[in-house]
Length: 298
Image (tube, rainbow, N blue to C red):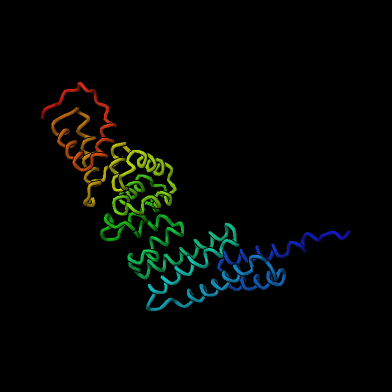
């Protein structure tokens, strides 16, 4: 019986590993050589097509960064981001965990190019903060997002800030940005919660939905305030809608109720009830004052 040569039989694996290493280091010459070696060792390798895609991308990438994008850099970056998202990301699956390393390098380089070129934030997928997030460079994402004009009222900016602060471990700032995002983009908030990977935020969001399933995410910050989930109230530059008005009232009531039930408390409760009776009923269920507590007059 013929004995297998372990080293000879593992040559395709060695050649594939060499190619992956060259791709991760963005080494065009080494990648081309490793690609030829893999093709010779195993012409029918199951990952050959994806490796071809990645080698072609590396050739293109090297050319692009040796010769800058030119005058229409915004259009070129938009096209580049779309190409990477649609074709290169799926191809990196052949690299295993090393694929993420390659992509982070690429996104980081594109983020610097976007920042240095002054790409406008209206091109949200190619703005520096968005690309820094994809590169896992969270501090840079926060730095480039928080200085944007009108940041408090821009949903995309609050999303970048929430994800950036969370990635940097600054959870109080992340929470505040997340609450603003709930006000500004309620229809996207459920998906955003999953994107945050914050167990506490997910738990609170699920509890909110259980308590107030008929209300949208604009009421979530008011729920958080009523559950004492916010360390520092957000009182400046709030959008104008009922959820924000309820938030202001809950924060105010939380302070007033510490000294008992007054006419001011009753007036604010009446305003809260006018905003939404469902939310008001939930709010009252959380009150724990004795029924016999007298009303304090101002």
